[in-house]
Length: 404
Image 1 (tube, rainbow, N blue to C red):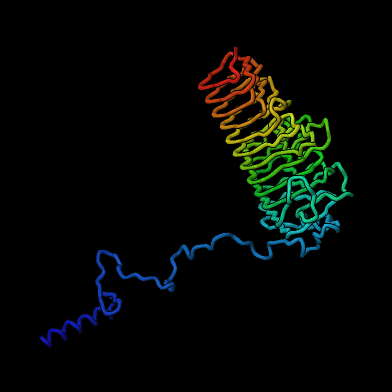
Image 2: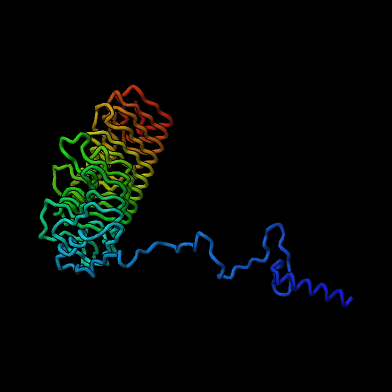
C-alpha cells in the first residue's frame, strides 16, 4: 500500500510539473473539454490583441487645450479681450479645445472660426437669469464699444463643432449671437447647456439668407442643441427678429431637445423661431412668448418642415400663435406635425401639404387653404375651429365651446 501511494504521489508531481493539471492550494483539477475551471485573474495576465479597456470619458492632451486665460484673455469684466480671443480663435487647429475658465469676457468685435474640423468650445460658469446682467454673471459679453451691425461669434465652413456651456450676452447691441454658416456646406454642430440672450436681432442664426440664391442659402445640417436657452433676443422692431432663425432650405436635420425660448414681458420679439426654410424638430421644448406674434413662424420663401413633440407654450391666450404657416404655394410646407402640445397660442396654416396634429391641447385652429390635407387625432381645441379645406380626418376631436 505504501509503495502504491508513493507511485500515485510521484505521478501527481510529474503531472503538475508538465502542466497537465493546475492546482489551487492543495487541490488538483484536470482540464476538461477545453474549460479552465481554475482561472482566477491576478491582473498580471498578458493582454490580448484588443488591449486594456479605455478609461471612462475622454480627456484631450494638454497640448490640445487652449486655455484662454493662459493665452492673454483676462475675463475680469473690465478688460476688452477681443484681440486675445480673436488670436486664439484664429490659431485653433482641428480637434483642439478652446477653454474658457469661469469669468466675464468682454468683446467688441466678432470671434470667428474658419474652415476647422472637430473644435470644441468649452465654457465654465453662466448667467444667473434670462435677462439680468448681474455682476457675478459668467460668459462672453458684448461691450458698450461694440458696433450694432456685427455678430458675436461666427462659425464658417466648419464641421463637427461642439459648444459646451457657451454663454453669449449681446447687451441689446450685438446684431446676432451665434451664426453657423458656410460658403457651400457644413455639417455637424452640437450644443449642450448653451445660453444666448439679449441680441438686437437674432440669437442663433443657421444658414444666413442670401438674395438670389436658388434655395436661400448653403447646406448647413446635422445640428442639435440640448438643455439650452435662447432668451430676450430681438430688440429692434419691424425686422422680423427672433431668438432662432433658420434661413436656408438646405438647413436640414435640426434638433432642439429640452430647450427654452422666451422674451421678457416688455420686449416685442416677433418670433421665437423664424423659419424661411429647412427642417427643424422640437422635442420637450418650452416657449414663453410674452408679446411674441408666433412661437414658430414659417413663411415667405422655401420649403420648411416642422415637427414638435411634447412641447408647451405659455403665450397670451388668443393674442399670439404657437405655429403660424404663411405659405399658400404648393410644397411650401413639407409637413407640420404637432404631438402632445399644450399651448394657449392658436395654430394658423396657409399651406398646401399635410398638417398633422395629435394628442394636443390648442387654443384654436385656422386653416384657410383648401389644398391642405389635415389630420386631427385626440385634439382638444378651445376657441375657433376654422377648416377651409376639403380633406379633413378627425378622430376624438373636442371643441369648446362647442360649435352651434
